[in-house]
Length: 572
Image (cartoon, rainbow, N blue to C red):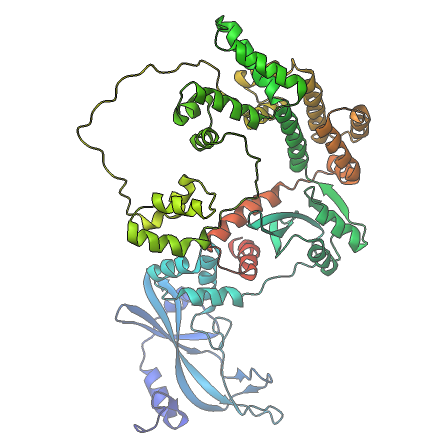
């Protein structure tokens, strides 16, 4: 037997030796109370180094063939199988199973022998027990596979990150075909470039699917696969509403209250931005009248009033003009930023420009195109500033702070040192300007939102009271406040009266919002009637972003879907 390659197996020729070996084992009665697996018979427990070994065998005399289901009692041979189990008192635990290889007596079965699979804790070709696999999957769902591998290794389960991923992909994801009410929203895979969709059950309050895009075709196909859906809570996206219309089914659409309020607030802030010049001129005039010192501010106010009669001035142009005025008086960019309450980078950028450049929100600095060049140049020069100047000569338009932040990994953290003794610069007379701090359009929007919700403080109420003196603001504010009251109320008849009241308004932004309400009227009407909100979907969008970041942006939609959909199954 020593020359045979399977000397570790106990064959049927040694059957008497095996029974004699097992009969000499003094198994404890209390082990069954600690480890209760009906399909396994615990023989004994021992220590093997730092590991705890649980020796067990099948408790049933017969075994079922996994290929045809025929039961057999004919034993072909025996072999041992080692599997990892949940740790006991922090020590790695292993199951040493004495498995029988059986003869299959079914003449129609293609397999003559098979290995028994005792119970539901032991699966074929696995190295972990079922309960240990569940523990691994739970750790893989709440973090990255590498983090889960390190945590499990510390707790006594030695497993690699790749094995954690395999267990996740092996887990079955339910289809949820009987879902009736859902919420759908988009999420950014890469902000401004690619987006996906998340579908959440409003009744179960958990995600049920993740789609790779937010196009009409993909959501329509999803609706066709789920015929039980009768209510969809969504944002104001036309893609989802078009998909519902294309499906040809009577699906009740509900526009989300949060997005409706957000949309009209965006229209209000845009309207304020268009008339920001008038507001800023009035603030400066009021500040000067309070201080009774018109000597410095009067020329500026006259110029602005003349400009305002010809055209509307936005907040960005007002900010640029005031930065240039302070720059002409001798103020440095850092002082200008502090005095006006704006970002230092914005003040520096405006000081460098002779004319306000158009704002392009879609602009992206593709740093990956310059990575190789920057790394080579930094290895030679050891400084980033001359490299930035070279790239600007080649057409790079990025600013200094983001450039330094992106290539921070090239620097050693040393920012230089100043000389201990330096000559003091001659003192010069500092310029003075006592204009008030700029209140941005975003801050005004926050004040408007808090006021219509009755949450405003004294400072915000003062700002709104000052803005209500303008005719262009008063009508927009009253329309926004009334619309918020309608959406949060229960009287659906007020919506059509509100639309008729402001339909002939001359405010362009309000008219645009009214046209959108007209096209989405049925869904907005259901918003008032139905006690449904898409807030749970928005919450899972935020959670999805956090999960996506733990995956370092390198995992597929398939794995992201598993992490989001399976979590409520394994943790509830």
